[in-house]
Image 1: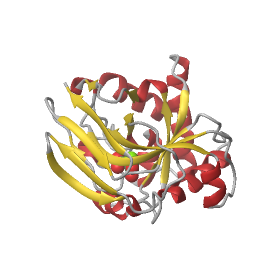
Image 2: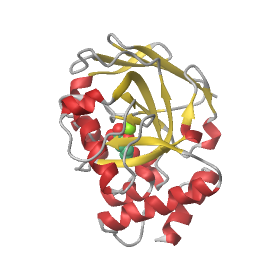
Image 3: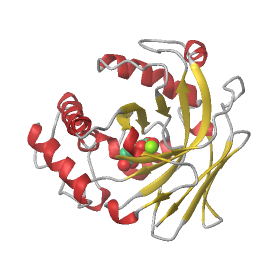
Image 4: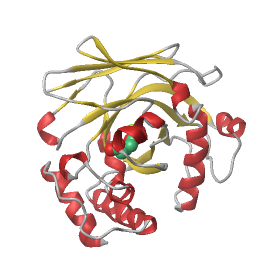
Length: 249
Ligand code: OOG
Ligand code: MG
């Protein structure tokens, strides 16, 4: 497990693709690799700040050809300032996807109802996730991608809004250089993005790392992801929640 974590970590730090894993992992082993991979980052001074959910929409599962919800860990180093720049050369083959982010104002753990989850939310925001599979050609099995921290690479969060509003079916437009490239709805995320937060609370506790006040949760891509290239300006507009953007240098 440690060998695989080291190999994936080197792929991150050198921005070089690694071949698909030779031996299939069980799901439990894949999450062990992910934990070991993150421990290497924590040893370099990174701080865990939240969790990202993956494959919470049909569009994402269909694009990547896998079935089943996954999660990954987010660190402070992955956070890109809204309106900021990312350096293309530090990624393998980055893609961007439109998401909804939550920030918690209270701990949230175990089996909770959507209403209880909402009561722990301090803010909701439009968010862009920059995913970057460390595997060659962006191809992986469900367990391979879990080991690779579920392709987590960077993320950008817009202004936080009051969570006391209906976020069940908000229009989402992902633009690259002013052209709409993906159009969707927050309803694509498990029918309601709060369901993704409910799942995150359960999965984080099961992993022994329950969500805390201040934790950020990314609910998962509402549409398929788009490949990035240097020079692009990427913007997401979410109905009622506003915009979030970044530039690719
Ligand atoms: C895996 C990560 C999935 C999402 O939002 O569904 C994910 C990938 O597609 O590389 O982040
Ligand atoms: Mg995502």
